[in-house]
Image (cartoon, rainbow, N blue to C red):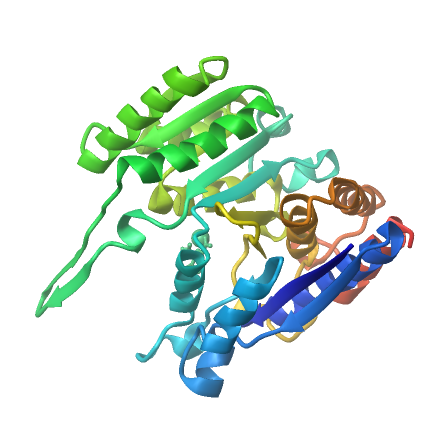
Amino acid sequence: MSYRIAILPGDGVGPEVTKAAVSVLSSAARRFNLTLEFEEYEFGGAAIDQCNDPLPPETLAGCQAADAVFLGAVGGPKWDKGGPRPEAGLLGLRKELGLFANLRPVELHPALADFSPLRPERIKGVDILIVRELTGGLYFGEKKRDGDTASDLCVYSKGEVTRVARVAFNAARLRRGHVTSIDKANVLETSRLWRETVIEVHANEFSDVELRHELVDSAAMKLITSPGSYDVVLTENLFGDILSDECSVLTGSIGLLGSASLGAGANGLFEPIHGSAPDIAGQNVANPAGAIASAAMLLRYALKQDAAAKAIEQAIFASLDGGARTRDLGGELSCTDMAEQIVRQLGS
Ligand code: IPM
Ligand code: MG
């Protein structure tokens, strides 16, 4: 099978971890007899530097035509001083591709339990899938500035909640059968609509799945005090942004985690959860595991190549088990060393 993959290296450590992910994808392609065509495009701050637009039309067209999109990272202090922002490119791409569901798995690797800020008995067995709504809420509502007053409008429709709730319930059926829906229904009208809709979708289509509701403030606390009590976490855009960073450190390093942004169509966007890390950019010390885990998700969700996805995930696990450690995990392996170890484990 032959697939086209749009590659957006982006900013900061983005290009380094993207190179690592592409090397692992190429090696998986050899082992599983797939033809992957990689087409690289300017995106984010790098594209602002080239043409003052974080999402140039050629990049968007390339992503629309591809079977999947891989992104390194966007943003950095260089573009904080006014003018177009790299992040606007990412938000635009999510919206244009209709990627309303963002999947962020948070799984503990036993060999890394010591890197968690939580005690081993508390972190044991943590395996959470965050399903974050990605194209609505405060991120996309009308923004206004009037002198010293500013506002961001938070809007959700029943349809937007329904479609992402279905993603969460379907995922729960393939896991431990439990969804926690997180909102702020004691204060926000959008959250009340969110909760009512989730209850309705559950009752009509997914009554076999267990459902509980939590308020976001208390959930932020419980994710630390009893992370093992969560299976699938379903939440809106901004809460999901915040809670997924919180959850990512439970496992020891944000550098380990990947994500998939999916919509109704085939082509999803796959990117590590970590940002552009400008402080370590260009030094070849970033942990590529999160980017490589995202590459595995690309094979699973966009290309339906589950065996290849599993092989990459096992190769990451085996490397960590064998003691492979980048700097964020107290080791000395470079980004390229770590990628090479994973490629070796993949055995192609
Ligand atoms: C993320 C990031 C983005 C977000 C930024 C870069 C716009 O933090 O993917 O979590 O807020 O969604
Ligand atoms: Mg974020």
